[in-house]
Length: 41
Image (cartoon, rainbow, N blue to C red; front, side, top):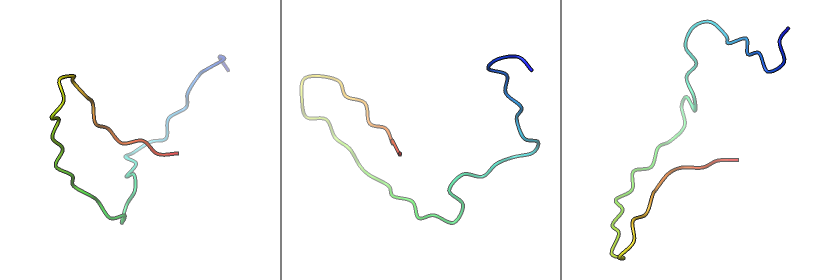
């Protein structure tokens, strides 16, 4: 084993299967650029 080594699972992994989604329209009216993202703990 190598420290930090990753052993990925085979195949595809579907995240949040069956969970509802939300679509937002976002407008920036300020004079500075903003980034919109999602974050979950």
